[in-house]
Length: 202
Length: 125
Image (cartoon, rainbow over the protein chains, first blue to last red):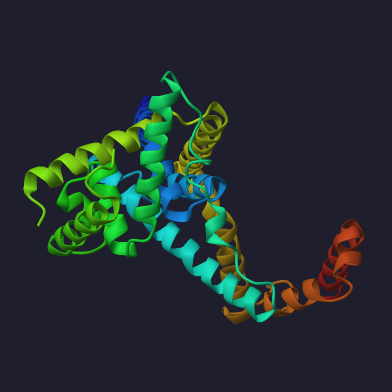
């Protein structure tokens, strides 16, 4: 009887520990996602030029991280999350290319990329004077357009390093390439962007 | 030629402009982000060990059923000590036959026949 009670107590204790660990993990994940989600959305939006699509991609990345990688150390979450997101963005572009080819085949034409107006699609204002707002939104619009025409790897390296603030190793992990490649892509991206935007940008 | 200082200044400006656009995200978008986060957290709850076990339950059940079927079909047949007839495979065939459902419905009747046959064999012996 006592032995049974002991086994039961150990079993209950084990379940409580697991439950507490799960709760703690849930809190950590919630905090991480809340901290990263807004920047991730804007990065995805610049990548696909569509907010609704970007929202779907970010949500998918969140779910995949929770489903497959939540047991990994929290320090690895940021590069893992962005790796999932970047893969999602690349898949999205592949699907768009296929879709456009099919549409062209059936004579429906392609979706006009020029329909997207980054300035018009810029988020709602919050506490700035109209002049400042306009200036910042214009600067962001110009930057988005310039980033949009960068080669994919350069775009990824620039956004992860500059916007998300990942270091070279973290960016390499997120992009699935070497640190040397990250440095090369990043340097080229900065050079191209500065050339396109000119000295008087911002 | 870009100098490191100029590059640094450009990066800081780009970051500031980007952060500004993040701050100005509208409430509807923030609400959708929150919904996405909650969906991810729900996924985490679904991935708890108990849930993972329950996810494998159907597969485990099928494997167990397949194992039982193999044992019944391939396993050594046993001889009924009462009348010397073989069981297992024969019983399985009966159970899988078209009349199986009728048999289950009239289980008491078949049980009575079994007992009656056994007693008559004993009396004859």
